[in-house]
Length: 228
Image 1 (cartoon, rainbow, N blue to C red):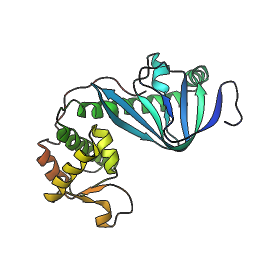
Image 2: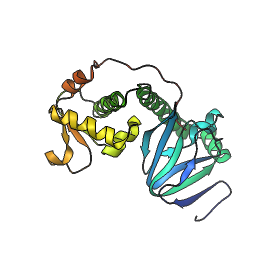
Image 3: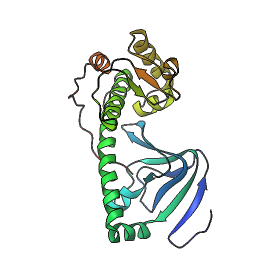
């Protein structure tokens, strides 16, 4: 911890440290300065990875603004340095600074939509379905981010562990499904096509969506609530 004040301070956290648990009261907001934080949520006994937060991202704001218990768990994924703000100071900034309030509101809305999409995946009982629909959702998000149609090759920048975590399946289940997709020529590792980064490349996104039995306008069963 360095240069503490009454309302905010910077603190270093080691990998594996839990910042807060799902269901806890919200007392602090965390802004990532260095490292990575993962957001996880448990639904019907299945815990899944909802988001990975890096420098410039923040978490913990929703419970404070809505005055409700934490809707997810936050844990340090890589050794990190965080700016920690107490709830009173954060709310003062939120209510007095229109620019900050607007940015927080936009991000909260985006996160709510993102979380609901991922939580819908967990409603599928079969592990293979959850993983395949997780991959479908990543493709949709990549297409939205890049303002492109889901045609042709799509790079999915998730490691096997991250894909399994998001789908709430074991590593072995993820390996089995990835091998099946690779065997059908629908997916290949990023390294095999000389991409300098983790993840996979879907050779033809539309064919993969057909394989999943999901149209580009399809939807999953509804899930409620948002982020921490």
